[in-house]
Image (cartoon, rainbow, N blue to C red; front, side, top):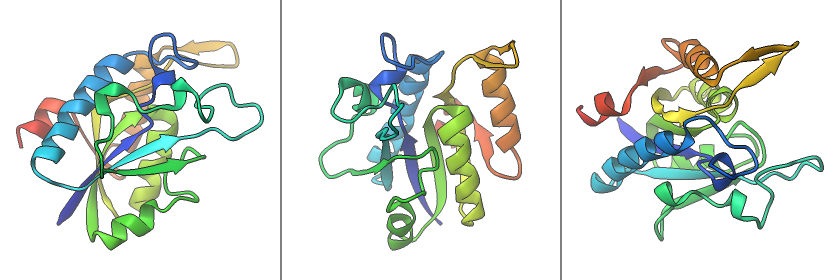
Length: 181
């Protein structure tokens, strides 16, 4: 079965002093880098997904800013596939599905940011498109959220969304588990 790594939105705005800093983004990016190195070493396909915000009220990932650039820890090498997107679902109005089909990819491994938004939307879409999915949980990151005056810490958001994906939508693994396979 052909496998590809999908690296979603590990971009500067999600890090310290960025426009939308996430909790644990540096640690998640370091784990993503380890997964990326495995795929590079094994010469397996990989795709960098880069979000470019085009909505009029966007406050981060604005085109042509430092914040929208892919973070140094997972920066694409020359010749690596980069797909720009404008929505949380990396398949929506992009060439991702066509590219994966052209490479006969059946299994996807996901790392990236934000867990409750772009990771969740893309993994669910991938499963609906009949891909087998694995999410490297400690190579993803999120932020504190609030609903109706109730604060939800990032660690609980992270756990809840990964738990929601676990089993039907994806197999959730940590970096060490995946690297030891």
